[in-house]
Length: 306
Image (cartoon, rainbow, N blue to C red; front, side, top):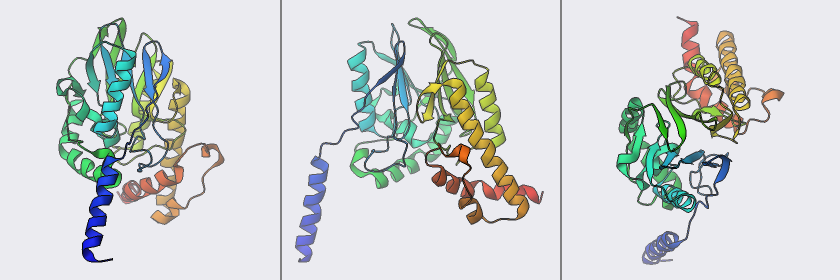
């Protein structure tokens, strides 16, 4: 094949790909009165799931709709908007970003900027890291990211309010990413926990300020006495079950890191460690152990020599 033919083939292939009909095929799951969740895939981001690996959700109150997280792309945000409008004719008045990881906020591009809110530190983190995340997602997901522009939220100031018959509380934590917003609906007992909670899916620990910090946040979440919890990743379930699932894994990981550092083991020893039977239900566990070993284990090694 000539060079010209190769170039032409590449152009035509790109045009064909751009013309493909792609869709997240979002299916809302009703978990409580006026409350819906869109379940993410329990896998790594790839071109099969379009980056939809995190759970998003919304509450359709009698006055307006509150959205919790917007997904990985503008296309996802647009499809989420359609899902919401098929359920409620009320306007969207508040769109919350739980934290600064891209699978939770890049869908902001589909929403009115004035409605986008997050913790103050989250807005700062998105300002520092958002463009890098967006670029990485474009490389990984290609056409799924078409027209996805970085659309940062502004800081939320009102934390306790009644909205269309729902008593809502916005609570700040920090154990997972340094700034983690959760939404608690006291009316239904539903807690949107973001990535503070992973249910039957090994937690990602890349930006935690410390596992002890995270475990302390989980103890505080228990005190809310929520009925149902929407984890950042994994199936919706009773609050105690999901929080315990996360705590059990993190406690084991912390003990593994401490013991390995004390014994002078290498990172590869962590990566290849045997998985205990009680954690066999944690999806992506080997993948997340590998990531945690790379970015967390050096801190445990340093602590040995302090």
